[in-house]
Structures are given as C-alpha cells and as structure tokens.
Amino acid sequence: MTPPQRQRRSPGQPPAVPPPADTPPKEGELRNPERLFVIGGEAGGERAADLDLVTLIVARADPPVSATPEQAAVLRLCAAPLSVAELSAYLSLPYSVVAVLLTDLLAAELVQARAPIVRQKVADRSLLEAVMHGLQKL
Amino acid sequence: MDFKSSDTIPGPRTEDRLPHTAEAAVKIVIVGGFGVGKTTMVGSVSEIRPLTTEETMTQAGIGIDDNFGSASKTATTVAMDFGRISITDQLVLYLFGTPGQERFWFLWNGLFEGALGAVVLVDTRRLEVSFDVMGRLEERGVPFVVAVNSFPDAPRYPVAELRTALDLPEEIPILDCDVRRRASSRDVLMTLMRFLHSLAMKGALT
Ligand SMILES: Nc1nc2c(ncn2[C@@H]2O[C@H](COP(=O)(O)OP(=O)(O)OP(=O)(O)O)[C@@H](O)[C@H]2O)c(=O)[nH]1
Ligand SMILES: [Mg+2]
Image (cartoon, rainbow over all chains, first blue to last red; front, side, top):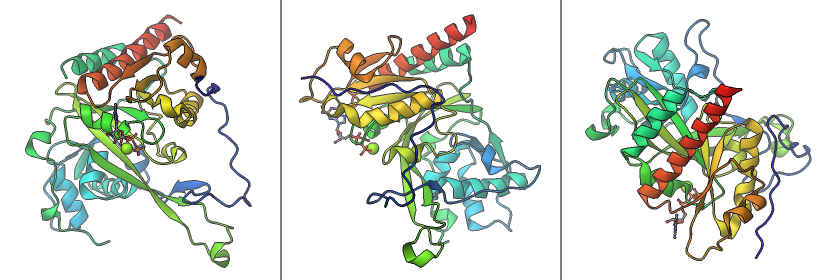
C-alpha cells in the first residue's frame, strides 16, 4: 500500500486564499474567524497583548476590599506563580477574558507578570540544553 | 457574568503549585489531525492533571446576510488541552495539544509564534489528517519533528517511504512512538529538543 502524498510548503507562503464570501461555510465552521474579545488596554501600561498563554502571574498583594470576585479569585490562585493558561483553566474563563482581568490587575500593580521565553531566530543553546536535562529526569 | 464565589474555585493542588523561584516558561505544541493521540501525549508526560483552556472565536459577521443583515456574530469555542513539566526551579515547560479545527489554532495569538517547536503526531491509517497542520507550521517557520503514533492495526511504512510521502527534508526527524507511555512521549520531546539544538548550532555557524 502506498501512503498518500503531501506537498511541502515554504516559509512566508501566503496562507490558502479564504473562500469567496458567497460560499456558505461548512457545518460548524466559521468564515473569517476572529477573536471575540478585542483588547485595548491602558496607554503606557502593560497591555493584554503582551501576555502569553505561558506568562507566569504572581500576586503582589492580598485582594483589596474593592476587588471584584473575579479579581479576588485571580489573586488567590496566584499566591504561587501560575500561567495564564492555568488561570483560564481553573477559572473556567476564556483566555482573552483572563487577559483583560490581568490587564487591570497589572495596571493596579496587584500582580506581577513574568514573561515567557519565546522562540528566536537562533535559539539559545543553553536554554535548550536545560530543557533536555530536565526531560531526562522525567 | 455569573461567576462562582472565589472561595469555591479549586485552584492547583498543593503539590501542583510552582515554586516562587519560577521565573519563566517555554512551550511546545503538539499537533496533528483529530484522534491521533495529542491529548494522550500531553497526559502521559504532564506532572499535573492535564487542564483545558479555551478561547472564543467569532465570525467576522459584517455583511453576512443571516438574520437579515443584523450584525449578529456566531461564536465558537476552541479548547486546548495542556500539561506542564518543571524543568528547574526557575524554568517551566508547558505542552499544548490542539484539538478541533486547525485554522483556529493559528489565530490564537502567539501560540505557535512563541513556541520553541512542535510535535506533529501522525497515524499511518490516516496520514492525510496531519497534512494541513504541517503546511501551516512550514509557512510560519515553526520547527517540528514527526512522531508516528503506532496503533496496532496501522500500516507500517519504512521511514524513507514516509519521508517521501510527507515530503520532508532529510534533517527533520521522524520517529515511532506510543504516546500512552511516558518514556516514549518523553523520547519524542527529547528528539524535538535535539533537533532544535542542531538548528541552533547551524544558525550559530551561518
Ligand atoms: N492503541 C493505541 N491507542 C491510542 C494511542 N494513543 C492514543 N490512543 C487512543 O486513541 C484515541 C484518541 O486519542 P487522543 O489522545 O484523544 O487523540 P487526540 O489527538 O487528542 O484527539 P482529538 O483531540 O479528538 O483530535 C484514544 O481512545 C486513545 O486512548 C496509541 O499509541 N496506541
Ligand atoms: Mg484531544
């Protein structure tokens, strides 16, 4: 039996052309999907756009009396560092809702955000070695 | 929003809390068509019970003539399983498994852009279900390895034949695995890391 054949794509190749507007979307499929929550953020402050699924969030203070229930929940959960993804999971809130919550908390300096290490053109070899070492212990 | 009182939200178990020294996280994405074993792989290597995060996507509804031109939008939820591995007291690795419709994953800001790399899982009974996502990774320049999740009744192809069928260059690792086994899933991740390391060596030379 011969396996089906794929064709390689190249970097920067424009994604496949979206279907013309008069093609009805398939069952359960949306046309031109976009994120539901568009995030603005305070000028000069840390914006939600700077957050990542794996940004680690740590509370800097106990919930003030003025905190909303959501904010209080975030502050309690982040007594120890917790990723935005984990917050979203424990709070059962979509990622971008959590990002908005965090934007306010960051502006109020109630939480601290620890940025992730993201892929670079030339990866940091010592970082990769540290990850390999950690996996070896698994 | 109907929000549960914060006292009733079960947070991480004590043993699942990260140390205060945790400074930064990295992530790896596990992709592939439906049912190839992504969730199983996340679960088998994660130190925490796998969790789910979701994002709500909506149709850009302007000008669409359902509801007689009203600006109603259809929302859909995209959910993602993830797990975690503590690398050191300072560094944490997160693994994201991406179910559902591929095209949504790539709208998830920074999911692929920031990832160190990706594991593409394939099932040789349905190789083609993983084609689209491989192309999308290539377009975005996300480095990946291919792991063949060995289901018992799946056809076995020699690696060379698979490489030709998948149209992959020689340097991209292709390996067999059983994602139900932690050691096997770990080997897949190690292979990805070694591959990334070799790319970094090459990058440093050019
Ligand atoms: N025999 C065998 N079964 C497996 C293996 N890996 C996964 N399965 C089974 O295959 C089914 C699908 O696995 P999942 O891990 O849910 O696959 P998935 O890629 O997350 O699926 P979707 O999220 O629906 O796309 C489950 O019933 C698994 O128990 C494997 O290595 N061998
Ligand atoms: Mg799954």
